[in-house]
Image 1: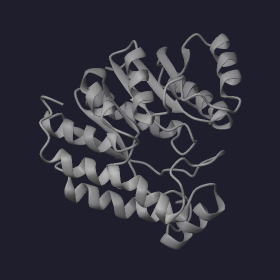
Image 2: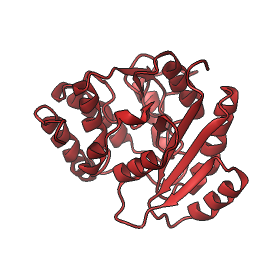
Image 3: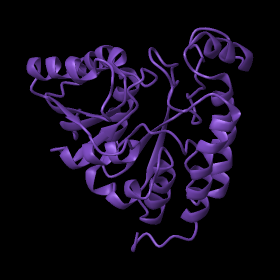
Image 4: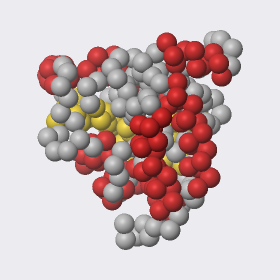
Length: 268
């Protein structure tokens, strides 16, 4: 890459040990492919009860570019991400889920796009050109039923996957931002573009709604890069699977989209 030669990548985790042993080597392989030697992999763990601590302590000893931190305060996805941003030592930061649904190939695509647009924020999008639902297979007929069949065989929820598509369309309509994937959580850009206030006022993934509207307010260009979101490899989804759980989880997103239209981001 010509313009980006240093990157900090943040993985917020909660009981993702089995996925981390696959994802982190994949990330390192991607960096090697791009000849990125100055990198930092920051794992911010919400006090997992699985083998995360043991595995990460071993990885940290083997690779000094890997940093591991355990949060002992109340569990929080947005604050885990923010802690990773605070501890990042490079100008550009990326973060993504550690459940195996977001892969090294997409990391490469985002970094290459960032290299061409270093003053922009790049978002991996399931709803941009080239993107797809969980369960979509690249080399087979991508019908909706086929995709949902693949999800059904995985550890993800068909209901959550269907509602995610509907929900994102609704959030895009309500919000000021033109971003299609308002719940992506897979993003890279300058560290200075991501304010603490956005993460501090959020409960879960709705921080991304606030962030997209904040970037729109600040007139920072957001470029969506389509990607196929894979199904969870191991462990249990934190999203939930019942309609009640999904509805309850979705309320903060709708609130964030509504508030974002009238919020004063200068005083946030």
